[in-house]
Length: 414
Image 1 (tube, one colour):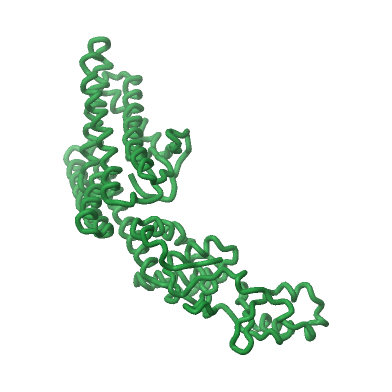
Image 2: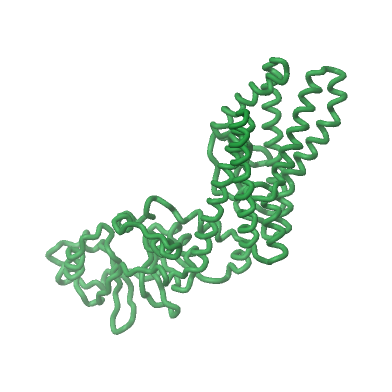
């Protein structure tokens, strides 16, 4: 069970309102597992394929266990995806309490244990009617037991890691501390799986050894992603708009002419022109865009005053300088202007904020620096450098229990 923005693969159907997806890698594993089970059932391909398919149905039920508990706690489940290493449920956010998080994490292994008990009890009746069915029931019972016990190993991204996270969160009061401890435990398990798989491979070379290495590699990748997500979330929470603000604005007076606005534009070679705000005697009057330059004949530019064509500042998407950066990211995503007007605590214009400004501030907090040309390219295009959007990260911050509990802090408008 993971928290993620979406799913990959082909959508098949909906179960209890949850979209079920299959990743292309699933078909590869289905074929390999069918061949392996076929050997166990004396070359019976039908039995091998049926066992493989029922195993993946067991995995689907395992993920449904997570998902139904999450739905009961008011957490949206985006999808369930079956892929090479099993299944994964993508949820919108963590449950708001550590015990709720623990209940969601424990639901999957409990379903697998229940399936194992049912299948173990069905072995004898099935064997009396058809021995092959009894063998399939025994195999599936053992696999579901392994699935439950494996997922209870205490390290992220496994369910046992989620349980560790929830328990640390409960007793320490810090969700982040829980994530860090469970992630560290997951890294130890992943390296253990890689070394064990490598040892087995060089001393016999079984399919199980390759599987162990793949699981360990996947675990390391998931741990790395979790730590990166934590670092980005913390940066977006701790940094304020004023830490990232730029100054892509110019100031003219309402009495200035359209000719002066035109000269200002000609002096700039930026493909995304600065905003032009109008101020008179220390009082902000509004702003003006390039519309009048396109609509009014050039010969009239010297007579036309900017104040005659100004628009209210409230039409510009804006945000308070003290707002956390994650709110600025979401405000930018909901604005068609690609830029925010940064307001002082007194509500007065003071700066601007663009996606490139956000990226540069976050990377600086993480002690990372991109080449200036990449930042300039992102600024020209109004996007994030290298196409790395901060929007999903900001959404994950907004969904954090501690942030939701303090949702009244900071403000934005647009």
